[in-house]
Image 1 (cartoon, rainbow, N blue to C red):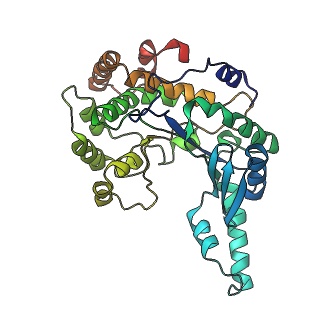
Image 2: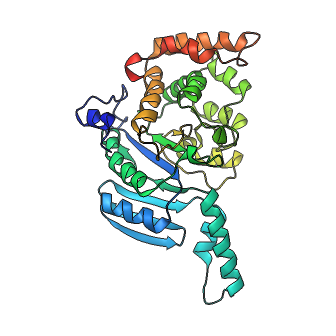
Image 3: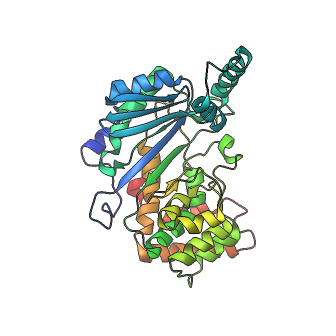
Length: 338
């Protein structure tokens, strides 16, 4: 993508988080999930291979894996579980013409409402800009994003690795996100089609109050248990289930039966729209907004002050009722990221 943001990135001016290494001393990475419509799976795969190289493995009519690209292995699928399962299990020799027709009609309807999803491998944060040219190619070919239709509740997800996996660090990131949630919702201009779905539901008020309590200092098992008691679902704007599954899979499985929950040492930030068809939009925009979470989480003094201010906002008679917090929050943000 030949945008000024990406040129700045290549020049070393697109900002990185305060902590760029993992606890093993390796560069932190980030995965990207992109939902959009307007192209069929064969066309998407062809465009991706043309841009990134590699070869495609066809899993079914609705799923492909792209191996040995310049950035690693990508997943590509029609994000509709029933069709994907049908595609894996189908046996054309045993299917009747009526069954084949029914699947074709279902696929046709699904492609009008259900997005295709591109899932990137973990990419070093310093190389995230390299996805720009792929997004540009998809846009020019006719990819459609969140705002193209009222029913397109499509998202862009970021999966950043954490600098370490201690309870203290995870809590700092969680507190930072909770304080910034209302600002991010406004800043990202999250589409109504996405706000009314359950996919990016806010955290329950009771849980927010508990986590932001100045005396809350849980060990890792307590942090996970408290999260699961209030959030035994993938449908959160910041989904911690993959992270907690990575850290303690049995504990999570006792509370969550959803087989779609993955396991990885990352956060799962689900809030931004996918505006791939808008020429003024690039991956740099949601990335810079996410960096406000990163920088606040890594600044212990500023985070404590913001948490205290947000608790006062919550305790006020109309706390959380009117949209005054995003404006109040602006004084705590880093202006160079805006």
